[in-house]
Image (cartoon, rainbow, N blue to C red; front, side, top):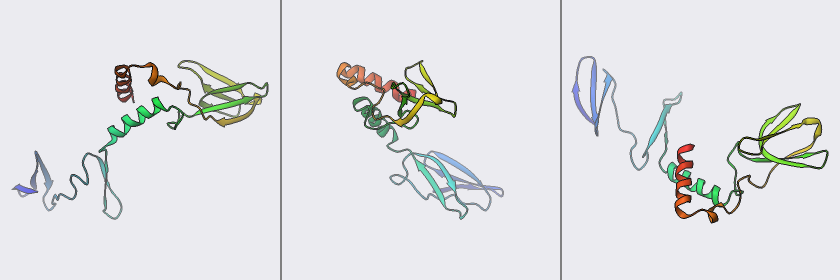
Length: 159
């Protein structure tokens, strides 16, 4: 880091394309840079003065691969709050959906884009995690490469 100018009240430090002004008596030191920290998104200090930085390097690549995996293998893993659940009812019917409410009086499962199943708790014999995604298998086989790329781009922005 190069010191640019010094006044009686503040000091200015130039780093790359930025100039930082800090109060008199303080210094600005470079403590981490690429490849250790490539795309920092936040920093904080603990009670002992140690600096912690979170870095987002590689996040978009991983997110895109996760999205692609969720399309090609929809039941391989589930994103938290999108896990399927199955309710076994006393009448023998199974109802599957995404758990929206688990209350003493009722269970509500989202089982479509704008539909949900409300099941009175008195009618429930068992609530268990589902093993199969609500997203259909084989979606990548009915989409063209361009449609799949468009879907990935849409989902990436929609997060």
